[in-house]
Amino acid sequence: MSGAPMLSNTLPIPIEEMKCTTLIAMLDDIHKQATTVLHNGVHSGTLEEASKEASSKLVLSYNLVERWVEAEIERRSTEPF
Image 1 (tube, helix red, strand yellow):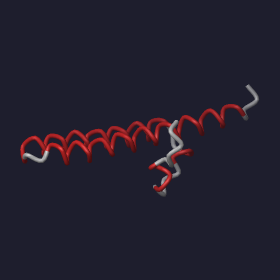
Image 2 (cartoon, helix red, strand yellow; image 1 turned 135 degrees about the vertical axis):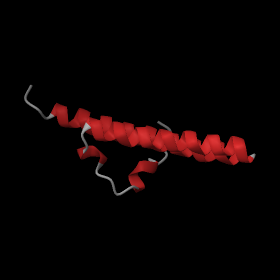
Image 3 (spheres, helix red, strand yellow; image 1 turned 135 degrees about the horizontal axis):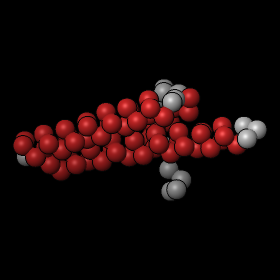
Image 4 (tube, one colour; image 1 turned 180 degrees about the horizontal axis):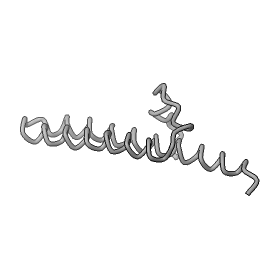
């Protein structure tokens, strides 16, 4: 990890308490948004800007997954079995 703060830490979402299926639905929405942004950028001629926006959405989804996995590992480590 680069040591940079996680973008997803700024969101008031209790990602650590989410069920996996909820996280998957959120990630699906974020990825659809990124794809739509790129699609619109291709057709409007602003592909460079669209690429930056789509990339930031994908980084956000990566950070959400990382937070969720870390919380899940911690939760499982406290279980007796």
